[in-house]
Image 1 (tube, rainbow, N blue to C red):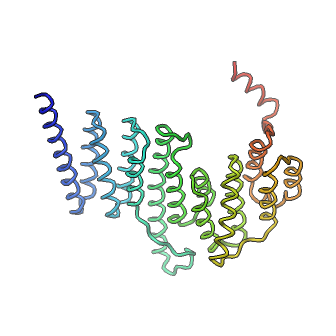
Image 2 (cartoon, rainbow, N blue to C red):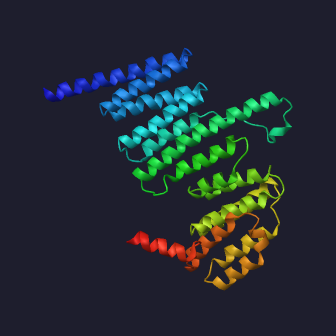
Length: 326
């Protein structure tokens, strides 16, 4: 009898959840986005206070997707962040089912093509509005995915967070940013697990980049992999870029920096610290075109040759380290 009562309560609860979701969807579809937003937040808060995290997640997931599908980026992003917050509160493990739900939210964020060169647009007011909307989309999606990455790091297998989530973030920043920050795109692709997809993004960037940006983007990507000790993906990336530029008829940059990267990849295949140091000295002007390159090369030397990095604070740094150990 007790099992029957519990089953009936569960069935009633499920019906109530479906009715709630349908009722709130109707409010959104009627155009009352703000009213629906407050209802999504209040209903989910009641579920959370009762520790009914599954129901709260269902409501928030539905609300996020429908607000975003109606172009309500600010509302959708707010609910998306709440969704991730509840994942953390409920200590929900990072598994394929939850990642699929996150992916559905990610795909619901609007994608609006921007002109290849923004300043070619004649209508400056329209340009300003387009840039503002793009920034709102990127900030909303980035905040959501960064929170999801943090949750996945705390509740999943990878201390860096889910590789799939890093790739989603890199893709959205690249495709939707009015002015792409390739350093951010690179950071997240390298934390991901798909160097071939990263190569496709870089080739797309090469096709529309300004002179002097192309070789920096490739070098940054390779050095970021190497600074993490990941020679395999660095080589896969370079091979794939060379293959794709040929088929896409995009010129591959022929600069001293690219020569350095090619020599570096070969050097790291063997125990050749003197050659590594010689390359850094000979190609110093090219390396210093971006300040972060020397730091990444220091990390690379530590990973591949065991070279201890010098403490930038010298003696005082050692004193502070000793004090902290007491």
